[in-house]
Image (tube, rainbow, N blue to C red; front, side, top):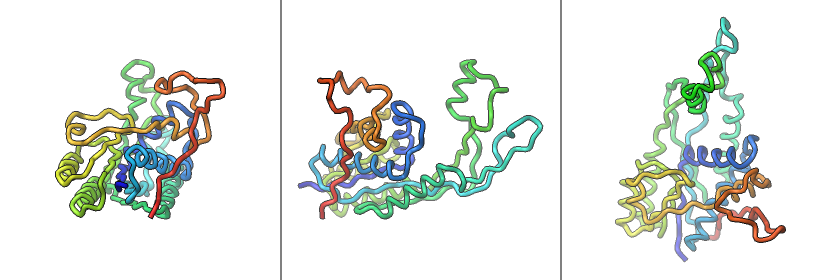
Length: 263
């Protein structure tokens, strides 16, 4: 049987998985174990699709932001903006717990980059769209309409190096990249020249022609079913691509299926 490596851009994974969760399920944050279940189920779906055993899953991310910052705005006019301590922020705790689970997972390599020393507060896209459409005014904007934007470093570099190493050393037959960034095109081209079957999974995100031109195929598993299985919930809206139920007792969600970890 063929051997496959699955490489996951953690920042992209986080955005896409949370997008589907917000759209089809509740707003309650994931637990670290649920995120691990989603990750394993996505990997497992690819291994079954391409009839491969797992060489290793590589997860590329950065440690959570560890700073004390002033919020972009005070709670009320005339007041001083309060301090935000990121270590007490739930996403900080969640990311650390998730990274710890990845470190302990079999056949999984956590590749951590670094965050830039400086960043800035930016208005969220939701708030900006509401302002542009006239649904909200600047007087309606609060500190919760801002997010702290900080640049990741070394993540793309580590991902590119691993693609090159896997291909040149003939360690795998297939590389499955979960990402949406065309920065990986040079590494993908090199891997294909070395005979590696290179598959892109954009998690149902839009891709550029530059990216799709230099891969051997696109495949994204059913994220709604995978997330629902991890949450043990049915979606609030039935996805159109599921089609109509065949019977009243038709099961809606599959059981979570982790990646195959055979020696």
